[in-house]
Length: 140
Image (tube, rainbow, N blue to C red; front, side, top):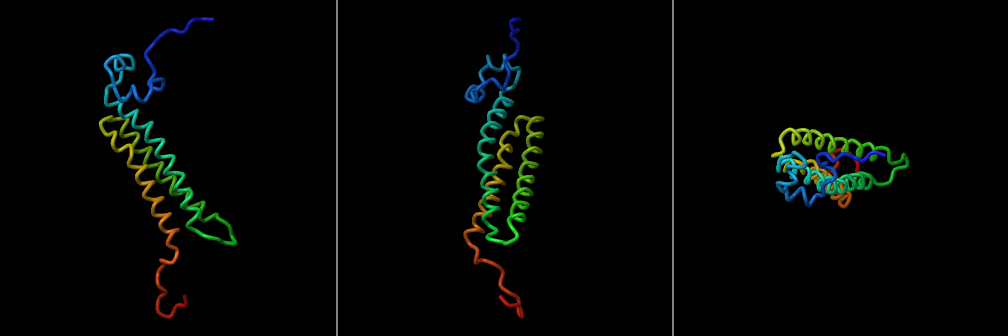
């Protein structure tokens, strides 16, 4: 067996707390700027918050539809489309942040959008009677 060579410290092997401190020794080991380390730490925290938002979007989309003899295919399709939109925005912003680490606050934009969408879906599910009024001549 050969002994592994010691090289630069991997950013993935560094704790989030160490990334937030961004010490000069860690900067020398990883070769990253303090802004890049803070952006990486915020990416890790955002992924935890984003999992909550994504779960709530799926739950809200399923609960907003109510019962149908035809199943839940429409609600599932809505949930998938909403999740694709949120993740597409997240991936686009991630590319921008990778290019310029000072934009790290935008990392949370897709998560906040997802929480807003889930809030709207859950609010709609809690208020099913708020529908449009029938037009003149229509039956309710």
